[in-house]
Length: 356
Image (cartoon, rainbow, N blue to C red):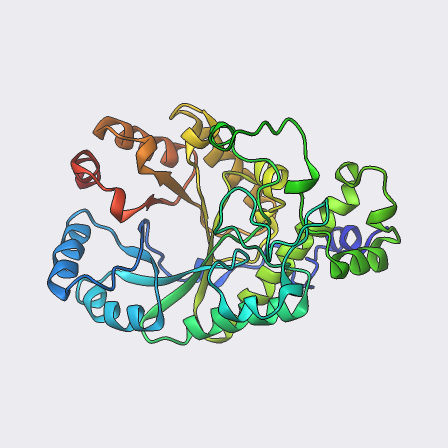
């Protein structure tokens, strides 16, 4: 019996935490209406004041804000004045622009055909993925999350790109890159670095390089799910030591997330989870938002009970009635609230829908 299977039977996670224990997010009142914001450090305070007043008018209670320490220090008084929570949004395993990571080529994930993400960037240039199995990588990411949690006014840390690179790209995106992914191909399959190889051999007694087709190995898939989960669990513990919350933006529902990016987010230790239910990415109608929300809520109930907030993509919902319908569907699917991606995409119909 594998270690993970034993722990599940014993009611434990792989980190030894009892299943079903309430996250700290269950013991406090959490916002229900969220929005992702990118830093606009070139904006004047007057510009920000105007925009934040608009957010307050539509009852946005919390923002997932990307930026630097200086961004958060500047924005906190403006947000506090309007009673809007600030959560620090960080890229986790996709380390585009990370100068420290660039000094360590060995940190980067390696594809099934032997190419390092240090030089080879699948799909787009900003895809620069590091390996979650490597302890120095984990320590580097945890350090950043801890530093964000220590900033005055930051209520929580919000993880994005907390997964591997897409082994199967969303169906609507494949034509944009001139590819057809009817199965898992080596050039998009990560990570085959020496650390992963050694750890997998030690844990499962198999060498991935001796396998005829590693993509068919359930153990090899599980190893990678667990690698990301272990990192998230370590971040959770570090952020909680600072008295802050942890959330994550994840793929639509666990079954799909496992399939296309090795992300078993229903196993993550989190206070809140934000599945990005962007229906147009998967060539699905708006009604799919309810289905995907339901799937995530159902899977979460088998372990933790952290609230789920449906992430909505504005370009997929151009009309006022589209967004209104999506909000109703998210609620019917069991979501505790919603998150909008993003402020920059807000048009008149969206402001009108959210005023309701």
